[in-house]
Length: 243
Image 1 (cartoon, rainbow, N blue to C red):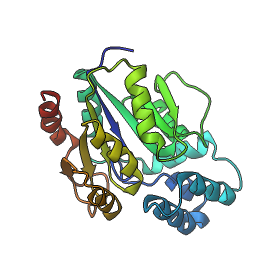
Image 2 (cartoon, rainbow, N blue to C red):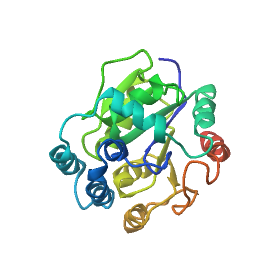
Image 3 (spheres, rainbow, N blue to C red):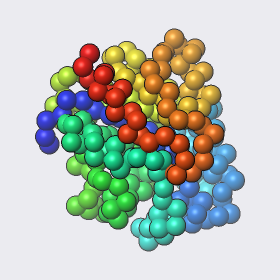
Image 4 (cartoon, one colour):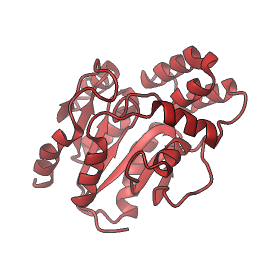
């Protein structure tokens, strides 16, 4: 699997990309858009669990999303915030494991990597509700994420699976759904990066005395072409790795 000296474990939705985890469903079934947005906001505000949100989602879907429908969504809508492909490549070239750790669906990322929209990452932690047949472009290691507390668990498992013994961890998130990951990260001396921080994450950390080390971007910024480049984070990571 290679030798890594650290791991970046980052949320995806509204953290690395201007989208929500259910957007591809709203694209395929436009009539469900408002209800999907309500479910997502209730989850990110920690008023329902991820498992409860997925149960609500399953109750709305008339049938599973197909690979062709996922591809149609990505062809029309895929975007990331600036500099993400370059940042992923920078991590790879600097022996840092880049791990996407998200409540999004495994199948969504399978198609992103199959279509060459992003460099394939070594590890993915995502929800298995939608998962397609395995492809050569799939991440080498895929962890199931069924509840938000699986984020820190899966980061720990990635450290073990990839033999990262340095204890160097960079955790990145934006909302209250990342709170348990930040709480764990604070306990192990991780570098905590808030990307376009929402009040739900800010209040979670404030209430628990957790310091967010780097505040990156603005929650009010728009689509993928706006805001700072993720490459601006590299000096903070390099400094952290030298501690």
